[in-house]
Length: 162
Image (tube, helix red, strand yellow):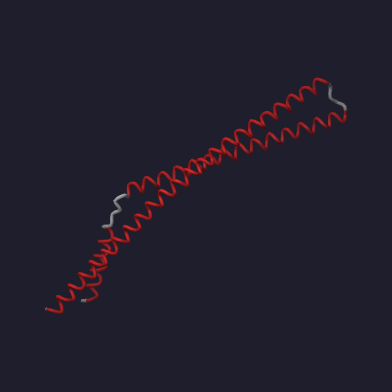
């Protein structure tokens, strides 16, 4: 009989524990979604930044190639004036593109920093709610255990009297 009593008590405990409802669960769900969205935005900015850095590397490689071919042609004295002017103009164009790319990277880095701040803020907001939920759950368990103990005491007293 005691075994079936423990089984019934275990079933009752599971039933009661399922009754715990965090009254701010919808807010917690929104905070989780917000954090996920902010992380996705951060990942997107990181991808853009990496692409921009790749573009900068490519431009630097082009510039180096042009400078090397220009130096080699100067050593061989094979360039005429028009080719020299064209090469310098192209080199200047590439140098301007490199400067522009540096500015783009700088702006993207600022965006990345701002987005990182948003992710950190969303994480903090989520953690506050999770801690509150945990505390409320612990309080619920404490009350449940107290009620359970009281009920068990009542059962033992009624059996003892009867």
